[in-house]
Every structure is written in structure tokens, then in C-alpha cells.
Length: 248
Length: 248
DNA sequence: CGGAATTTTGAACGCCCTCAATCCACGTGG
DNA sequence: CCACGTGGATTGAGGGCGTTCAAAATTCCG
Image 1 (cartoon, helix red, strand yellow):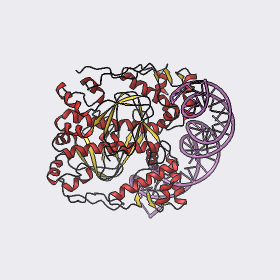
Image 2 (cartoon, each protein chain N blue to C red; image 1 turned 90 degrees about the vertical axis):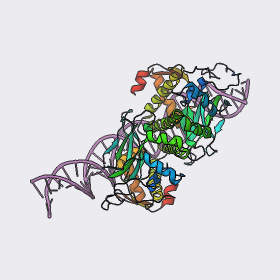
Image 3 (cartoon, helix red, strand yellow; image 1 turned 135 degrees about the vertical axis):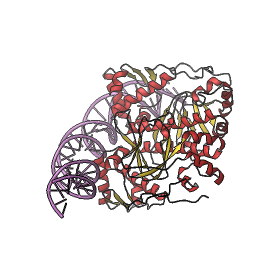
Image 4 (tube, each protein chain N blue to C red; image 1 turned 60 degrees about the horizontal axis):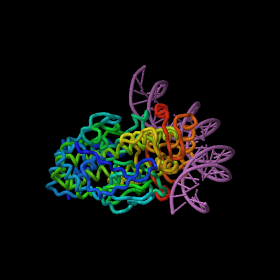
């Protein structure tokens, strides 16, 4: 099993950035978050490195790519967080995704050769580009890589499917609860604290993501706070009663 | 270019079914709807046949697969129509897709090895199963097939992304208008009449798909009718003013 | 043909939105 | 150092759109 290297550059909670001086030539461990690497032998992992480009910094509020840009490849988030924004054709914007370290995004760009959404950094972040042309060639030899790529795409389909279910039928209260639990879960998977975290999105962005208005987000968070389920202090969140949140 | 064969079994508008007596060993033309075949040489198309299983009939209201069933492969719809239903984990059902002939579904099952939704026939229909294990092997040799598969998955991501934008922000009126235009467009692409069609879903299913209640669907259709934009007669729809619908 | 499912339409309610004012954190420049 | 400006967050009041409940009409299908 490949070793994990520390890839965080800016830590989660406001502390000064850890500068990554060593220009990273990607070790096997770094491939872990990709999902592409799972189940591969070390020898094959080495070949996968070729598809992963140089780590790249993106400052807060900067666009990594925009809707309509020529598709170059997808990206894996190394550190920080992103949002993806769609809806240009429909005349209004909608946050379709909230991306955490280790997750891959930009996959919607494959089918038409151009990105189908914007990707905006919510804080200073680091990404690795995945060259799709290289990956495709590699997939012909490496059966496992191909399967992992297909799985990655399928996962995104399932994720969006779930989000659709939420955007339909759920009450505003439930949406916010699900949102908090979802972030908690994903952070926990990545080794961060599960019950205490900083939201990188504004209330407006959260609202867009959940299909409700920013005031409703704020009111709902306040109510949860009042009821003792969570503690809200601006963007700082502490979950007190996960059970109750899940049952809303 | 491979020739197109008639693959419809039950025609769109209530006429008696055309019985397909010739047990279909799939010709190149039949692969057209797959998307998998686009851009391939005739020689390669022949090899693609191996992944396409025997045509299979599904009667109205029958389940082709259910949430949690072991993933065997995806399906291409040959004739008829399907809905996909998700939301089992969340405690209520939601129609996530409305599938027309030529479209592929069941792709969400890849990532966890089991289907992530139900697939229910809205009328007597015919499908062709796609063996994923066979397809994966083929993709190693056939660069084009792999690219087409990836594109197919990406397309689904984009489609769902659009649906999410709709489920967020849009008024009920707009949702219904977009829904009608979307179906019209897709039927037109497949050689059916664009402005006159039969809805196979109930008002309740449409409502679930659009994130509104069945009464709202009914009321909105009635209003469009009253305003002369469309003609509604139960499930029969005629579009009069496509322009106006698009501008709602 | 008959019973059940679906659709339509009405009336009243409620959740979320809209509009608006205030508060707060933060960074900037005098 | 503080005044100031700005963007974000909070909270309140009122209104509107879609829901809910209900009943009648119609269609579907075995």
C-alpha cells in the first residue's frame, strides 16, 4: 500500500499557510485521493503519475475554469475547497457542487469538449490537473485504471442524483441538516474533525446549492443553534446532536 | 455509414404494436442509438455487437431493475419509455429521469456494483442490455469505444446538472414549459413529431420529476391551454407556441 | 362494462421568499 | 488608532406561490 504524504497546504482552521517548498513530483501516495489509483499495483501506480500534472495554486475567488472553456482535463483537489457553478444557459447561476480535498471535478466537460460549469476557489487552494488524453491512452493498457475512471464518473452521477432528490421534496430545514451532515461526513473521511468545521461558502452560496434563499439558510442555522443542535458562529460550525439532525 | 433499421415495436401514438418477429441479431444500424458506436469503422462496429445482449421486452409498469439489485450492466432503450426512480435512502421517491428510445440508463450502478434507482417501464417497451464486463474488455482494444463510453457517462452528468439547476430556482410554470420543450426536442431528434406527442407519465410522475405537486402540473398545463400556448387532452399534448413557451 | 386510478378544479393554508433595516467582521486609508 | 466602507449575516414583517385538503369529472384498463 502506498504511503500517504501530507498534501495540505493551508490547514483547515485559519492558521498560517504551510508553504510547500518541495516542488512536488507526485509520489504514489499523492495519487490516493484520485480514486483512479485504488486497487492498482505499485508498478502500475508509477505509470499513473504521468497523467497527473504539476500541482497548481489557485487563490481565493479565482476561477480554475469557466463555463465554455475548452476542456483540457479534470482536476483533483489537493487542498482548500471549490464550488462549481452552473446555469449559464438558463439565465441564472446555481451552485451545483462543493468540492473538498481528494475529490475530482470538471468531469462534465468531457462530453462536449468544454466545461459545463465554472470552478471557483472558496479559499486559497491547490489542484492537480489530470490530462485526459494521456489517461485515455493509459486506460487501454491498465484495466484497473479504466475501471476506476468509469467508477469515478458513475459516482458523480449518483451524487448528483442524490442532490436532485434533495432539491425536490425536502423542507428547507431538512436540506440544511443534510448539508451539514454531508460536509461533516466528507471531512471525517479525509481525517479532519467531523463535528467542528468552517464553512467556506457564504450563506448565499449554501442557499444556491440547496435551492433555498440565503435568509432561509441563516434562519435555519439560527434555529438549530437555539435548539441546541449545533453552535453557529459565522462560518464556524460545531455539531452537538448529530442524531437529531439526521432525524429531521 | 451503417444503415438504420426500424426498431420501433410499439409506435408512439396508440396504433397497434408492430410485432418484431425476426429475432433480432443486432445489425450495425441498431447500435446507432447507443452513442457507443459513433465514429467507429464498420469492422469495429461488428465487434461492438458482442456487448449488446438480446432484445428484451418489458411490459408497462414492470421493473427492469430495482434499487439495490446487483449491477449487471446498463440498458439502451429500443422502444417505449421508462422512468427512473430514486430516493429510497431519503425515505421518499423521486423521479430522476424520463427515458426515450435510443437513450442509455442504469449508469449509476457502476460505482457501487448495484443500481442506484428503479427503472420502470411507462408503456410496453423493448430494451437491450449492455454487458459491462464485455464492454470494458473491448474498450482496451477499441480506443473509440472507450471514448464513447466516457462521453456517455459525462453526458449523464451534464444532464443531471441541468436538472438540478431547474429544480432549484425555476418557477413551476417555467419547469413545466422546459419539460414540454425538452420532450419535444428529444422526440424530434429521434424522428418523431416535435409538436404533437403523448405523455407517458402521470401528472404525479411529472410533478415528482419537476419537483412540484401533481395539482400544480395539472393547473399549469390548463393555464397554458387557456392561453393558447398548447392543447391538452389528457396525456395528448400539442404545442402551438414553442417560442412563447421558451420565453416563460 | 365496471371499478379504480387519474385528472381537474376550487378554496384555504403555510412555508419560504421578498423587502428592508440592523449588525457584524474585516480591511483600508486618513 | 480610529473612522469609514464594504460585504456578509441576522432578524423582522408581510406577501405570494405552491401546497394541502377535498370533491367531482374523466380516463384507463382488466
